[in-house]
Image (cartoon, rainbow, N blue to C red):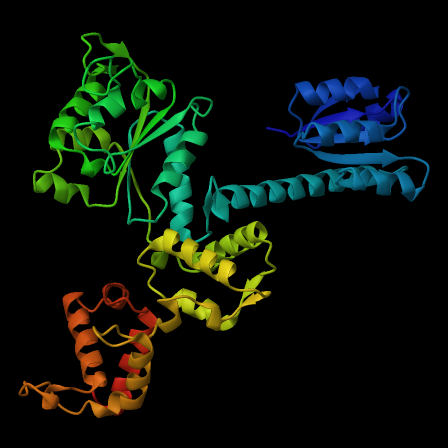
Length: 478
């Protein structure tokens, strides 16, 4: 199907010639003589390109361009000028025109120009789609452009268009509440509230009242009627955080609510219709909770319609630096500091650290740096524990500084034989390098050789293990 062209030209003879050129090349042409009619057509219809004479009887053609810009209409524009002057053409380009034609011009010049601006428009749309859907650096409260997060953003986009229950899993600090809020904000329920309940922070004898509400006198302390979170979120979203912390009895009542769409406040015999979208989250493995009898299987399958798995920060490549820079800018502004960047050494530490506390831990580290220090560049001397000794192995009773010093002094070459039991006393003291070797190799055995996983449980960076293994190999130890 041909592209739609709006031709704005008050000279009917010239307009007929241009139309024949375009129609002969497969374009669909709509012709108007006045600027006011052109604006009305552009607002009402969908055109791929507009060919606009700058000199019209009712207005300057530049006014049409201003309307297109102000209303953010998406189409390519070619302007026609007949006075040979470049000033109007330059002004038109500043207002958003893609190209211009100076009269007189022939058929080939017209068709080539139209073809070129349409190709450029298509490229621009592809680039915008790439930026909006494939290469997003920020999205609904998230920061990060890694491939794994692009996948999360697309799942959130899909979840927002539906009304089904969403089950978010991920380690503590990965942003499960941000994910729930992102789904809500991108959904049709965004104009209504999202109400969050932390199922792990509310005593089990109060969780029912918190979700479903109660009537006056239902229990000691119930001095008035009170709506629960479900009624408060009516028309919006109910976010049940740490859902696997909910006790079995409360799970039964939650399941009944999900099946009926009705809540029964504690102490009442009346049922109230409620329309909410359920999003829940947990940092546990829900299938393990089901298998061990702590979470109802029927409730799990009722909630686990659309799963969202949030990756740990250590699994997000260079997102660590993007997130760190985001928090550095944010907290520097809040605290009136001038920090703007990290040194290369700090970048390396951030990349290699395992971040067991994920985004929340990184956030606290950056806040600590900004509050306690001054300057423009964050250097290694400003890093708080444990990042200040991120390459060390924590040994009970030995300070981090001592560990680094002893490890450096001992070196991998001191490991020359398998570990053997020795008598108690001074003779039982073993070189730190031996303890280090034993701790790392045992962790690798337990984790089936997965170095990032072993580093996580050891509380050190994966880079430290790689460095140690390389040194041991060179010395013939491993």
